[in-house]
Image 1 (tube, rainbow, N blue to C red):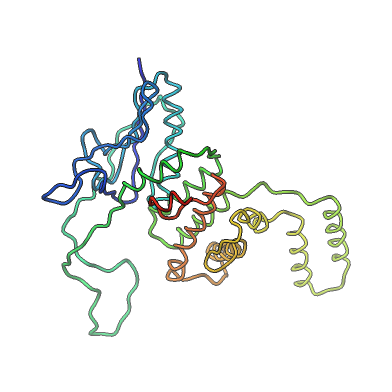
Image 2 (cartoon, helix red, strand yellow):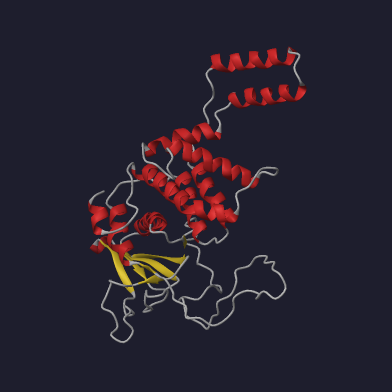
Length: 341
């Protein structure tokens, strides 16, 4: 008896099978490739990335299946399934495609069927219309922009993922701790989110998920801070000033998120993000996240947040790559960038 595994992946956008096969002469699309082998260890198992159903093509798919077969034991099939879930979690995140991969907690429990999104991105009659939002104008001004327009569909080619991203990852030893897996999960959630505020919060929270444990101050420092707090209580100063200074002294007693974050991002060395050193970039984005979630602060506008998101995503993915692999991952997945890394 041999064993197999299966894991359905829901994608944040449709994929193209371009360069994985020969284009259909009528459509110009590669519409006959239904699976691609990711690993073949013969009697020790084969792993494939397949279309959403048996015989269904990869082209324009909104979901895929990770399938392993011919494993000699249940344990080897389970270990391979978990290992490849990790590979794809990392690969799709750095390929800028989000996935929903589900849980691996109970692999013997049959998966419950249910209704979901269509397997494929299917063009349908659509019109150009406004995004949700408030619009105010003088009488006589046209309301919105309506009408029929030709619309193109941009799909992420899966060829680079299979040819460059996954081999780069699988050729290296790495450990995906619960902290790192949570950070990747938060990154994947952003690919499904079109709200710039929640996307910004999720990306900064992904950094926070990677923070090292809080360290206690040395006893000598803690003692001096305690003495300063006692002295402050006896001073004759304005009450609001006393509270402000007391708050600063209280914060100094602990290893703050900002100080731990600056130590964390030091692994990025001298690289610049948004023209800033990593520690300064982290501090500013963390401050902006705090202003989003706490009342009474000046918040960034949605336009300002959208402008910051690409670089913030680049920062988070760079940090994850160095934390997981100990080296900077390529940002573009081509033969030249992979060979040069």
